[in-house]
Picture 1 (tube, rainbow, N blue to C red):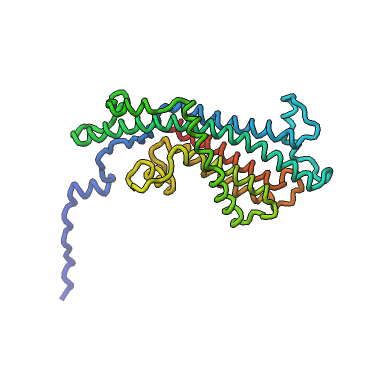
Picture 2 (picture 1 turned 90 degrees about the vertical axis):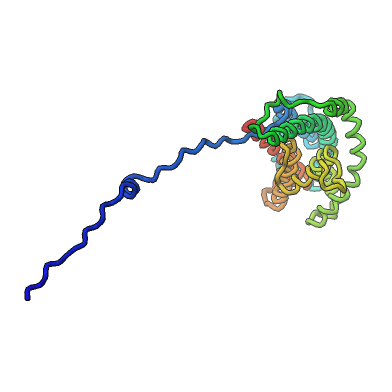
Length: 320
């Protein structure tokens, strides 16, 4: 018998939905553009001015105070201060090592005086700014909470954040600059005890105990730079974990500073501590230059980190 013809089953016609899916990509619903939520920073121009002045004053004070100890032909002309860096790279063999160490130690003591004066000014200014920022930030948080509870669109213009009578009373408690200076002077009484803790930590990390004076100088220097502003402004953490001081310290220690006016108290110590640690590598290099004398690299490294932390904070404030 001849073979039967081959039969085929016709395919069903493609549906319009599948054809469209094969020819064109699936259409998605248009999504609303995401907007970047900006940080609210109270009086940003004031904060930027304080941070920039803080950096400039530290640099000028350090150069002007240490240069007389390092320059054997010291003069009071400001033009001579431009040769400061060439002075640091002078040939150390021309002067005995002991004399270089004595010069840099005396320069560090003079620099410590400048650091103390600048840090007292900065701490007093930042304390007044911080207290006012806390009041404004509290009003904004209350306004946002009221909008959320009322089912309204959440978003607050600072002009409509109502100031309560309690806020007015707290505003009157914010002291003037003179009162802030008096308060900081009381906190300075605790710096010797804090420097003992820093001194012990430096010894445990490998600082030379034979150079007791130089290590004590570094400990006082770091205490003023790293600990004075946050301890005075935030105070010690209280026993109540829900208090404002405890919350602020928790946000700093967990590397997530909030509210935004905590940024200057976070990036300054962080960068300063990092650059001080990196500066210890300069002591072990074989460059054979005078500025490798202990403790000069650590003092310079801590100030460089502070300036970098200030500039980084200014960038964050400008970008929002």
